[in-house]
Length: 321
Image (cartoon, rainbow, N blue to C red; front, side):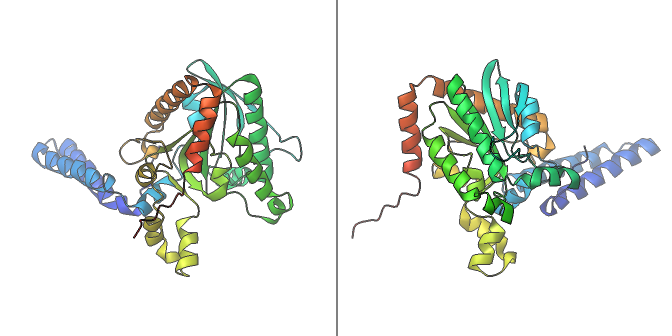
């Protein structure tokens, strides 16, 4: 798979092109250019480390949105077995932006659900660009209630710029659907593990994000608003998205420090789009470990921990003068 470079990756692309040209020239002319090749290889390795180990929040947002990044169903394919998708919310219809169903992970039966984006225009229209309608959130909750009934853990994979804000979604009460999910997930008597795999935008992400353990891929982002939306409100100019991304502290490192996410899942150098299988292996380990930890608790202990986890978010402490 040919990976399209992002703007900040162009120095890497230029060095890789130089390296390819040197190797081709050496092979075509049967000459020894090992010294020059080694020099470029060393420079390339150093450049990659310098860029990818010092990514800004905005650069991580760009990686989270990369069109070749693994999506929800890619992770289902690599991390789970025997996925059986179920459809419909039993009220209006089905929402293909929110696939959900039964699966196994290491022999453990679970319910897995999440946001799904498309790879091309046709699939994006089918998946509504990963922005779920009210039917998607109601379907997700229907499956979570089934998980509770049968004593199965829930694994939620979050990847959305936000819930769909169109007129139809408003008519069918998107805000109520998300709010209802928040309430019901808080008291669901079965383990819930949520993983932010790409974009974690606003209430659209939180609508399936109330969980006992919230995990986050290294280059994902999780925020109450997109950087562009924040810039449009605060600076009246979307071009300030870079500054907004830094101010929002939406990357995994910052969110882990604040206790909003419980674990950062490392990605291959350059991002998850560079190695779908390797990224999935890291996520699978993290989900498995979280489920093992939660299954060692009683239901009451688990619910108390879930309540305390979300109750303390946003807590402000003022210093006494």
